[in-house]
Length: 147
Image (tube, rainbow, N blue to C red):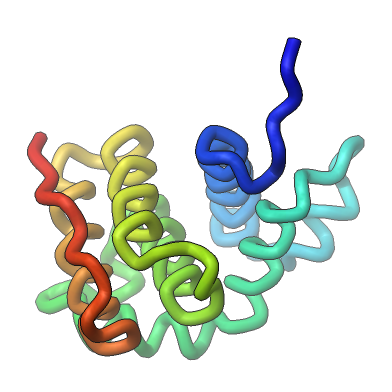
């Protein structure tokens, strides 16, 4: 059995899924990430913790940016999972220069497609691509998504 580094593709994918679950719990229960993390029997890996804590810390800034680019949708009208995925993707675009823009967008789109509505992948892709054009101009465009 080989070990995976926390920075490996599948390791980060698993960490993002864990972060999504934790942030979903925060959003639906009205808890803080500190309360949710403290209740866990085993802490999540470092990347998941950094994303969850960063999303909570930067929530107002993330929400303002998401609201600017989510035409026709307020944050409160969005499915909770879409809102959480958009916050995670926006956090990575703003605060994780080690994650290429295309990767941050593709991973968020994949989470939305797997765990949210039929239209969520396209919606998340459009919003995050617009945000990336502002905050990371000139970086690789995300691959088109189909569903």
